[in-house]
Structures are given as structure tokens and as C-alpha cells.
Length: 194
Image 1 (cartoon, rainbow, N blue to C red):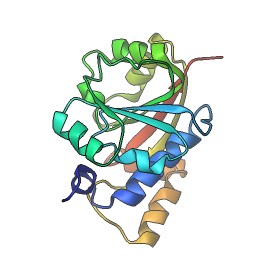
Image 2 (image 1 turned 120 degrees about the vertical axis):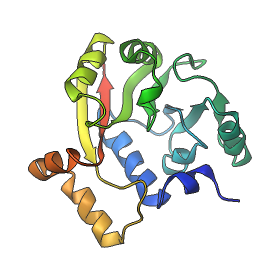
Image 3 (image 1 turned 45 degrees about the horizontal axis):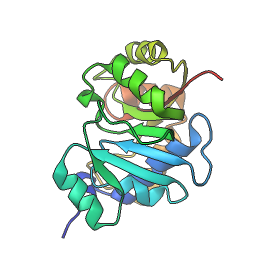
Image 4 (image 1 turned 60 degrees about the vertical axis):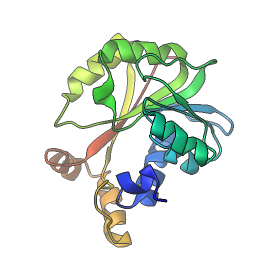
């Protein structure tokens, strides 16, 4: 049986591995055993790339929750706008799902209330104005922001060298800005000033 992760990503391993690298690299550090909440997690495929963390996923599709459970992943059924974990988490992630938030500022404020470290999400700059999202984060009490372009494609599997070149290009500001006008996303980490 093909998993949702395999259906959603042309080449899930480099895509999710790089996403996990950026979750760890951006913003305050995470330590082994820290709890990560992955909102709109699908089948929880990201868990495999963050083995040192305690992973909890949330998805509003019962089929995703069942699929995750069949793979031994801890995923709860709930709406990302309403969910609140039983205890605080070190990090909360939200990928490919920002459009599910009913009110971005209220969502970020809600998530900041139970997230002790950082909130990490992807941001399509052609869909959302980056300054508006940063203003929403600040209004929600998350004034510190780090961003990194994310150039691993979701719908195309690339040869290893080309994929590595794209990841390297993420650090080239002029090239990255140009590429983000037409394709790709940012990975954003936001956290409270301490």
C-alpha cells in the first residue's frame, strides 16, 4: 500500500529530510527528547526524520490519523485552529497548511501559548505578503523571526547533484530572491524574545 507521504511528494526522503534539517537549524535549538507538535501532519511522515524528538502529530482528516496509527506514529484527530496539547511543546510545526488558519494572528497567538521554543512553518511569498505574516507573528508575541528559502521540490524528483545544487542555492540571497518570485517557499521559525 502506498502511503500519503509517498503520494504527496515525488521524492519524500530528500524533501522531508531537508525540512527536518531546517526545523532543527532555524531559531532556538531543540534537544534530544524535546516534544514537537506537527499540525496538519498528514500521515506523520516527518516523524521519521526527527527521531531524537518526541513527535506528536495532529490532522483533521480521520483517514490520515488512521494511516499514521497503522505506521505506529502518534497522531491525534483535531482541527489545527483548536488543538491544544496536554502539556507544552518545545516546537510546533505547520507545513503546507497555513491557509487552513481561520485568523493568522489568533492562530499564532494560540500556538505561542503552548509552544515554549519556536513555531516553524512554510510560507509561499506569492500567496502571502511576507511583511504581513511577520506583523501577525509579532502581534501574537513571536517577534524573533528567521527565514530560509526551501528549494527542494515537492512534485519533482531530481538527480542528487541537482538537488544538492538547489539546496546550496538557498543561501545565495540574490538567486534565492529571484527564484522565490516564481517558485518555492520559505521555511520560517518564530519565537518569543527571551
